[in-house]
Image 1 (cartoon, helix red, strand yellow):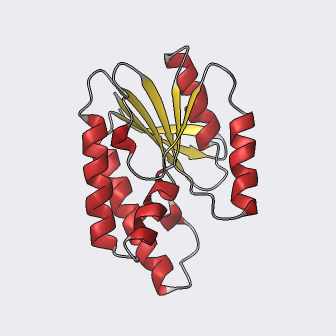
Image 2: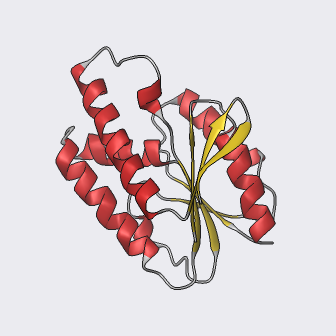
Length: 169
């Protein structure tokens, strides 16, 4: 089963996804994809870690999520935007290569046996138009990856102001 939780920044995606994971499992996996870029990001990571108690298995993995054994588990991946950023930076902003690598990683994860994935992503294309060429390229990458993930998901939920709106499944 694949759940995709999408929405704007601070729309309640992570809280919703964490509650869903705990409804589905007494001991879910939390996969954090953030790279520690600066002190602000570290503060954000620290805050998210404090929100999770001993029921969670916490794993930090920047790119190669398929190295994690998800078999038989409920896993929350938070979030696609930060995960894609790692591919985008490492490929020197190559949209096609980033998309290809991220899709391949996802396919490896989804092919594991008896796995329930809850994937958090951002709808960055719904906000302000990016000022820079690189920002616009990343917005395209994010949009294409979201479409791919939504096509693979059994259920898609759009978070709007903390309210879940089911749009698929």
